Length: 358
Image 1 (tube, rainbow, N blue to C red):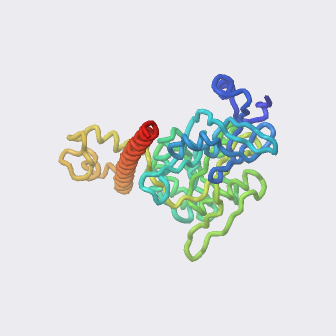
Image 2 (image 1 turned 90 degrees about the horizontal axis):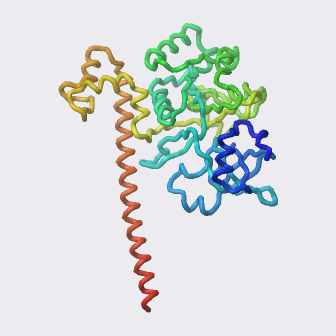
Image 3 (image 1 turned 90 degrees about the vertical axis):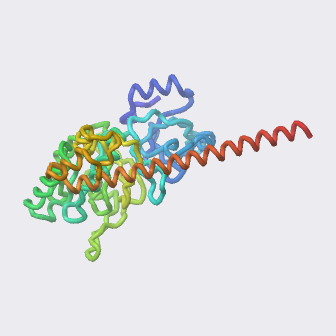
Protein backbone atom coordinates (compact mmCIF):
# COMPACT_ATOMS: atom_id res chain seq x y z
CA UNK A 1 0.00 0.00 0.00
CA UNK A 2 1.43 3.39 -1.00
CA UNK A 3 0.93 5.04 2.38
CA UNK A 4 4.17 6.95 1.94
CA UNK A 5 2.22 9.03 -0.58
CA UNK A 6 -0.03 10.30 2.24
CA UNK A 7 1.71 13.11 4.15
CA UNK A 8 0.76 13.00 7.81
CA UNK A 9 -0.26 9.32 7.79
CA UNK A 10 1.62 7.75 10.70
CA UNK A 11 2.77 4.27 11.67
CA UNK A 12 0.26 4.36 14.55
CA UNK A 13 -2.57 4.95 12.07
CA UNK A 14 -1.39 2.05 9.92
CA UNK A 15 -1.27 -0.24 12.95
CA UNK A 16 -4.83 0.78 13.83
CA UNK A 17 -5.95 0.01 10.28
CA UNK A 18 -4.30 -3.41 10.26
CA UNK A 19 -5.52 -4.41 13.73
CA UNK A 20 -9.07 -3.07 13.58
CA UNK A 21 -10.23 -2.73 9.98
CA UNK A 22 -10.73 -4.87 6.93
CA UNK A 23 -7.66 -5.31 4.77
CA UNK A 24 -9.64 -4.20 1.72
CA UNK A 25 -10.07 -0.70 3.12
CA UNK A 26 -7.54 1.98 2.21
CA UNK A 27 -6.72 5.14 4.20
CA UNK A 28 -7.48 8.65 3.07
CA UNK A 29 -7.98 12.14 4.47
CA UNK A 30 -11.10 14.26 4.10
CA UNK A 31 -10.19 17.51 2.35
CA UNK A 32 -13.73 18.85 1.83
CA UNK A 33 -17.24 18.04 3.04
CA UNK A 34 -20.53 18.96 1.35
CA UNK A 35 -23.45 17.68 3.43
CA UNK A 36 -22.94 13.89 3.22
CA UNK A 37 -20.63 13.99 0.19
CA UNK A 38 -16.89 14.13 0.76
CA UNK A 39 -13.70 14.73 -1.17
CA UNK A 40 -11.01 12.37 0.14
CA UNK A 41 -7.30 12.43 -0.67
CA UNK A 42 -5.75 8.96 -1.04
CA UNK A 43 -2.38 7.67 -2.21
CA UNK A 44 -3.87 7.45 -5.72
CA UNK A 45 -5.29 10.97 -5.73
CA UNK A 46 -8.56 12.65 -4.76
CA UNK A 47 -11.97 11.06 -5.17
CA UNK A 48 -15.60 11.65 -4.23
CA UNK A 49 -16.94 9.55 -1.38
CA UNK A 50 -20.03 8.79 0.66
CA UNK A 51 -20.49 7.08 4.03
CA UNK A 52 -22.06 3.65 4.44
CA UNK A 53 -25.72 3.30 5.33
CA UNK A 54 -24.70 1.75 8.65
CA UNK A 55 -22.60 4.81 9.56
CA UNK A 56 -25.49 7.11 8.69
CA UNK A 57 -27.99 5.03 10.68
CA UNK A 58 -25.73 4.68 13.75
CA UNK A 59 -24.75 8.36 13.89
CA UNK A 60 -26.17 10.01 17.01
CA UNK A 61 -24.74 13.48 16.40
CA UNK A 62 -22.65 15.54 13.98
CA UNK A 63 -19.52 14.21 15.69
CA UNK A 64 -20.18 10.74 14.27
CA UNK A 65 -19.85 11.96 10.66
CA UNK A 66 -16.52 12.56 8.90
CA UNK A 67 -15.18 16.10 9.11
CA UNK A 68 -12.57 18.02 7.18
CA UNK A 69 -9.19 16.82 8.46
CA UNK A 70 -10.43 13.35 9.41
CA UNK A 71 -8.50 10.23 8.45
CA UNK A 72 -10.94 7.64 7.13
CA UNK A 73 -10.91 4.07 5.85
CA UNK A 74 -12.75 3.56 2.59
CA UNK A 75 -13.44 1.14 -0.21
CA UNK A 76 -12.98 2.35 -3.77
CA UNK A 77 -15.35 0.97 -6.38
CA UNK A 78 -15.33 0.94 -10.16
CA UNK A 79 -15.88 4.42 -11.47
CA UNK A 80 -13.81 5.99 -8.70
CA UNK A 81 -16.50 6.40 -6.04
CA UNK A 82 -15.31 5.80 -2.49
CA UNK A 83 -17.44 4.47 0.36
CA UNK A 84 -16.25 5.47 3.83
CA UNK A 85 -16.55 2.65 6.37
CA UNK A 86 -14.75 4.08 9.40
CA UNK A 87 -13.14 7.16 10.94
CA UNK A 88 -9.68 6.81 12.48
CA UNK A 89 -9.28 7.93 16.14
CA UNK A 90 -9.02 11.72 16.27
CA UNK A 91 -6.24 13.67 17.96
CA UNK A 92 -8.54 16.69 18.27
CA UNK A 93 -12.03 17.81 17.26
CA UNK A 94 -12.92 21.48 16.96
CA UNK A 95 -16.63 22.20 17.36
CA UNK A 96 -19.08 24.93 18.32
CA UNK A 97 -22.76 25.33 19.05
CA UNK A 98 -24.61 25.22 15.74
CA UNK A 99 -25.75 28.67 14.64
CA UNK A 100 -29.39 29.31 15.48
CA UNK A 101 -29.77 26.14 17.59
CA UNK A 102 -30.07 25.82 21.35
CA UNK A 103 -28.30 22.49 21.71
CA UNK A 104 -26.99 21.37 18.31
CA UNK A 105 -23.28 20.84 17.59
CA UNK A 106 -21.42 21.91 14.46
CA UNK A 107 -18.10 20.20 13.84
CA UNK A 108 -15.53 22.59 12.37
CA UNK A 109 -12.57 20.29 11.68
CA UNK A 110 -10.57 17.36 13.06
CA UNK A 111 -6.93 16.45 13.79
CA UNK A 112 -5.71 20.02 14.15
CA UNK A 113 -2.35 20.90 15.72
CA UNK A 114 -2.61 24.70 15.75
CA UNK A 115 -5.50 27.14 15.41
CA UNK A 116 -4.62 30.49 13.83
CA UNK A 117 -6.99 33.07 15.33
CA UNK A 118 -7.12 35.89 12.79
CA UNK A 119 -8.33 39.43 13.47
CA UNK A 120 -7.75 42.48 11.30
CA UNK A 121 -6.24 45.43 13.16
CA UNK A 122 -8.05 48.01 11.03
CA UNK A 123 -11.60 46.83 11.82
CA UNK A 124 -13.72 44.73 14.14
CA UNK A 125 -10.92 44.11 16.66
CA UNK A 126 -12.46 42.21 19.57
CA UNK A 127 -10.64 40.60 22.52
CA UNK A 128 -14.03 39.14 23.53
CA UNK A 129 -14.18 37.15 20.30
CA UNK A 130 -10.59 36.04 20.73
CA UNK A 131 -11.51 34.65 24.15
CA UNK A 132 -14.39 32.76 22.52
CA UNK A 133 -12.06 31.21 19.94
CA UNK A 134 -9.59 30.37 22.70
CA UNK A 135 -12.34 28.61 24.65
CA UNK A 136 -13.12 26.42 21.63
CA UNK A 137 -9.42 25.62 21.20
CA UNK A 138 -8.77 24.81 24.86
CA UNK A 139 -11.79 22.52 24.94
CA UNK A 140 -10.49 20.64 21.89
CA UNK A 141 -6.89 20.48 23.12
CA UNK A 142 -5.60 22.59 20.21
CA UNK A 143 -2.73 25.07 20.57
CA UNK A 144 -3.91 28.60 19.64
CA UNK A 145 -1.87 31.30 17.90
CA UNK A 146 -3.26 34.85 17.69
CA UNK A 147 -2.61 36.51 14.32
CA UNK A 148 -3.36 40.24 13.99
CA UNK A 149 -3.57 40.88 10.25
CA UNK A 150 -3.45 43.87 7.86
CA UNK A 151 -0.89 45.73 9.95
CA UNK A 152 0.08 47.75 6.87
CA UNK A 153 -3.30 49.54 7.11
CA UNK A 154 -2.44 51.18 10.46
CA UNK A 155 0.65 52.84 11.86
CA UNK A 156 3.32 50.76 13.56
CA UNK A 157 2.44 52.45 16.86
CA UNK A 158 -1.23 51.51 16.50
CA UNK A 159 -0.37 47.90 15.70
CA UNK A 160 1.99 47.64 18.68
CA UNK A 161 -0.66 49.15 20.96
CA UNK A 162 -3.21 46.52 19.88
CA UNK A 163 -0.60 43.83 20.45
CA UNK A 164 0.07 45.10 23.96
CA UNK A 165 -3.67 45.31 24.72
CA UNK A 166 -4.14 41.73 23.54
CA UNK A 167 -1.17 40.36 25.49
CA UNK A 168 -2.31 42.14 28.64
CA UNK A 169 -5.87 40.82 28.32
CA UNK A 170 -4.87 37.34 27.06
CA UNK A 171 -1.37 36.53 28.35
CA UNK A 172 0.71 33.52 27.45
CA UNK A 173 -0.60 32.98 23.91
CA UNK A 174 1.78 33.34 20.91
CA UNK A 175 0.91 36.49 18.95
CA UNK A 176 1.99 37.44 15.44
CA UNK A 177 1.58 40.79 13.66
CA UNK A 178 1.00 39.98 9.98
CA UNK A 179 0.90 41.93 6.74
CA UNK A 180 0.24 40.33 3.34
CA UNK A 181 1.67 43.45 1.71
CA UNK A 182 5.00 43.81 3.54
CA UNK A 183 5.26 40.09 4.54
CA UNK A 184 5.75 41.11 8.17
CA UNK A 185 5.16 38.11 10.42
CA UNK A 186 5.49 35.40 7.75
CA UNK A 187 8.79 34.11 9.13
CA UNK A 188 7.21 33.73 12.58
CA UNK A 189 4.16 32.02 11.05
CA UNK A 190 6.34 29.39 9.38
CA UNK A 191 7.22 28.08 12.87
CA UNK A 192 3.71 26.59 12.98
CA UNK A 193 3.64 25.34 9.38
CA UNK A 194 6.12 22.52 9.73
CA UNK A 195 5.79 19.41 7.50
CA UNK A 196 2.97 17.15 8.66
CA UNK A 197 1.30 19.71 10.92
CA UNK A 198 -2.29 20.89 10.38
CA UNK A 199 -3.37 24.45 11.09
CA UNK A 200 -6.95 25.68 11.12
CA UNK A 201 -7.80 29.35 10.53
CA UNK A 202 -10.57 30.93 12.58
CA UNK A 203 -11.82 34.47 12.14
CA UNK A 204 -14.59 36.73 10.96
CA UNK A 205 -15.15 37.53 7.30
CA UNK A 206 -12.64 40.11 6.13
CA UNK A 207 -9.95 39.04 8.61
CA UNK A 208 -7.67 38.02 5.73
CA UNK A 209 -7.93 34.21 5.80
CA UNK A 210 -8.27 33.71 2.03
CA UNK A 211 -5.56 36.25 1.27
CA UNK A 212 -3.24 34.43 3.67
CA UNK A 213 -3.91 31.12 1.89
CA UNK A 214 -3.19 32.68 -1.51
CA UNK A 215 0.05 34.24 -0.24
CA UNK A 216 1.29 30.97 1.29
CA UNK A 217 0.46 29.09 -1.92
CA UNK A 218 1.87 31.75 -4.19
CA UNK A 219 -1.28 31.73 -6.32
CA UNK A 220 -4.90 32.86 -6.17
CA UNK A 221 -6.59 29.65 -5.08
CA UNK A 222 -9.15 31.36 -2.84
CA UNK A 223 -11.32 34.24 -4.05
CA UNK A 224 -11.02 37.47 -2.06
CA UNK A 225 -13.25 40.52 -1.94
CA UNK A 226 -12.66 44.05 -0.77
CA UNK A 227 -14.17 45.22 2.50
CA UNK A 228 -17.32 47.30 2.06
CA UNK A 229 -16.41 50.88 2.95
CA UNK A 230 -19.91 51.80 4.08
CA UNK A 231 -20.45 48.91 6.47
CA UNK A 232 -16.80 48.19 7.21
CA UNK A 233 -17.60 44.49 7.19
CA UNK A 234 -16.14 41.62 5.24
CA UNK A 235 -17.98 39.36 2.84
CA UNK A 236 -18.25 35.60 3.23
CA UNK A 237 -15.86 34.68 0.42
CA UNK A 238 -15.04 31.16 1.63
CA UNK A 239 -18.24 29.12 1.49
CA UNK A 240 -17.01 25.74 2.75
CA UNK A 241 -14.21 24.19 4.78
CA UNK A 242 -11.26 22.88 2.84
CA UNK A 243 -7.97 21.18 3.72
CA UNK A 244 -5.18 22.70 1.65
CA UNK A 245 -1.73 21.13 1.25
CA UNK A 246 1.11 23.68 1.37
CA UNK A 247 4.33 23.26 -0.60
CA UNK A 248 6.55 22.31 2.37
CA UNK A 249 4.23 19.60 3.69
CA UNK A 250 1.99 21.45 6.15
CA UNK A 251 -1.80 21.54 5.87
CA UNK A 252 -4.09 24.54 6.25
CA UNK A 253 -7.84 24.40 6.85
CA UNK A 254 -9.75 27.44 5.65
CA UNK A 255 -13.15 28.13 7.18
CA UNK A 256 -16.03 30.42 6.26
CA UNK A 257 -16.14 33.53 8.44
CA UNK A 258 -18.16 32.83 11.58
CA UNK A 259 -20.70 35.43 12.70
CA UNK A 260 -21.57 33.30 15.73
CA UNK A 261 -19.05 31.53 17.94
CA UNK A 262 -21.40 29.64 20.24
CA UNK A 263 -19.98 27.78 23.21
CA UNK A 264 -20.86 24.10 23.60
CA UNK A 265 -18.55 22.44 26.08
CA UNK A 266 -18.05 20.98 29.53
CA UNK A 267 -16.45 24.01 31.13
CA UNK A 268 -12.79 23.01 30.93
CA UNK A 269 -12.13 25.43 28.07
CA UNK A 270 -13.62 28.40 29.91
CA UNK A 271 -11.67 27.58 33.05
CA UNK A 272 -8.44 27.37 31.05
CA UNK A 273 -8.96 30.67 29.19
CA UNK A 274 -10.06 32.56 32.31
CA UNK A 275 -7.43 31.01 34.56
CA UNK A 276 -7.22 34.07 36.82
CA UNK A 277 -10.94 33.89 37.58
CA UNK A 278 -10.77 30.11 38.08
CA UNK A 279 -7.91 30.60 40.54
CA UNK A 280 -9.77 33.32 42.45
CA UNK A 281 -12.97 31.25 42.57
CA UNK A 282 -11.23 28.66 44.77
CA UNK A 283 -11.05 31.31 47.49
CA UNK A 284 -14.78 32.12 47.35
CA UNK A 285 -16.82 31.57 50.50
CA UNK A 286 -19.37 29.37 48.71
CA UNK A 287 -18.48 26.49 46.41
CA UNK A 288 -21.45 27.23 44.11
CA UNK A 289 -20.61 30.94 43.90
CA UNK A 290 -21.82 32.58 40.69
CA UNK A 291 -19.32 35.45 41.11
CA UNK A 292 -22.03 38.08 40.78
CA UNK A 293 -23.51 39.20 44.13
CA UNK A 294 -22.49 36.66 46.78
CA UNK A 295 -20.86 37.72 50.06
CA UNK A 296 -17.27 36.54 50.29
CA UNK A 297 -16.76 36.21 46.52
CA UNK A 298 -13.05 36.51 45.80
CA UNK A 299 -13.74 37.27 42.12
CA UNK A 300 -15.96 40.34 42.69
CA UNK A 301 -13.60 41.54 45.42
CA UNK A 302 -10.70 41.41 42.94
CA UNK A 303 -12.88 43.28 40.46
CA UNK A 304 -13.58 46.03 42.98
CA UNK A 305 -9.87 46.35 43.76
CA UNK A 306 -9.06 46.74 40.09
CA UNK A 307 -7.08 43.48 39.99
CA UNK A 308 -9.40 41.96 37.39
CA UNK A 309 -10.21 43.30 33.92
CA UNK A 310 -13.89 44.34 33.80
CA UNK A 311 -14.39 43.45 30.11
CA UNK A 312 -12.84 40.01 30.59
CA UNK A 313 -15.02 39.41 33.66
CA UNK A 314 -18.19 40.39 31.75
CA UNK A 315 -17.22 38.11 28.88
CA UNK A 316 -16.59 35.25 31.34
CA UNK A 317 -20.09 35.60 32.79
CA UNK A 318 -21.60 35.67 29.31
CA UNK A 319 -19.78 32.50 28.22
CA UNK A 320 -20.73 30.71 31.45
CA UNK A 321 -24.38 31.62 30.88
CA UNK A 322 -24.23 30.31 27.31
CA UNK A 323 -22.61 27.07 28.50
CA UNK A 324 -25.29 26.51 31.13
CA UNK A 325 -28.05 27.22 28.60
CA UNK A 326 -26.52 24.79 26.11
CA UNK A 327 -26.15 22.07 28.75
CA UNK A 328 -29.75 22.45 29.94
CA UNK A 329 -31.03 22.43 26.34
CA UNK A 330 -28.94 19.36 25.51
CA UNK A 331 -30.23 17.53 28.59
CA UNK A 332 -33.84 18.37 27.66
CA UNK A 333 -33.23 17.06 24.14
CA UNK A 334 -31.80 13.80 25.55
CA UNK A 335 -34.82 13.47 27.87
CA UNK A 336 -37.21 13.78 24.93
CA UNK A 337 -35.15 11.25 22.95
CA UNK A 338 -35.38 8.77 25.84
CA UNK A 339 -39.15 9.22 26.02
CA UNK A 340 -39.51 8.76 22.26
CA UNK A 341 -37.25 5.69 22.38
CA UNK A 342 -39.39 4.12 25.10
CA UNK A 343 -42.59 4.82 23.15
CA UNK A 344 -41.05 3.28 20.01
CA UNK A 345 -39.80 0.24 21.94
CA UNK A 346 -43.23 -0.32 23.54
CA UNK A 347 -44.90 0.02 20.15
CA UNK A 348 -42.55 -2.54 18.59
CA UNK A 349 -43.19 -4.99 21.45
CA UNK A 350 -46.96 -4.56 21.11
CA UNK A 351 -46.78 -4.97 17.34
CA UNK A 352 -44.69 -8.15 17.69
CA UNK A 353 -47.11 -9.55 20.26
CA UNK A 354 -50.06 -8.95 17.96
CA UNK A 355 -48.28 -10.73 15.10
CA UNK A 356 -47.53 -13.74 17.28
CA UNK A 357 -51.13 -13.90 18.56
CA UNK A 358 -53.37 -13.25 15.53
